[in-house]
Length: 243
Image (cartoon, rainbow, N blue to C red):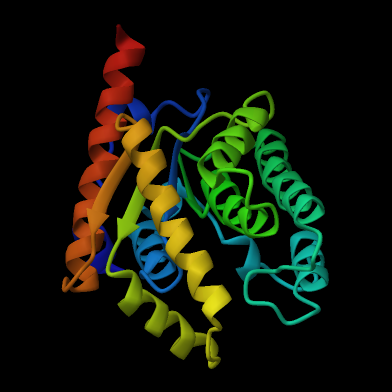
């Protein structure tokens, strides 16, 4: 499409020829209702065929392995896939994320950019919030960090994580409208906790996290800023590799 070419993300020439190296890996994060999936898909369209978009686990086809696992976790109708067994849920979701990496490693056509709609950070913060509700004696911040540290041998951290932030009340309202349900007080508490956990992780890793405030901004403007982040990270990675 002409518009996609006009607004294409400009990657360094070296990266365009760097198929033998690990792809540039960008994850997109944010609380429910912040517009993350809309922005992620628009970014993937800008990058074009050079990009592999990894859809959020809950958006993958029901006939796929991730789709079947998510369907099992969602069988009780909980919006956050809570089954009453948070440790088992966490391990199942982490296994699916590791599987994504393994499947990518087996591809003959390695993409230049991997754009991930919710990465390990999502599993860490949401499951930490859920586990914290079950076990109040455990600090969710410590749980989130532990989950991420535990996964280090199996999955590398993204080259950058684009964190979309926004008014959690407005985001919660949009989320409820999208799924056509009234969120319980317990659901809202999870979102508030996740919002705080994302902020904590971003403060701890300012080099990886790029926070973009979406409040009152049109989607096109947010996408444009996120595209600049990707271009900047790609240039920095090329500079580091050359050095």
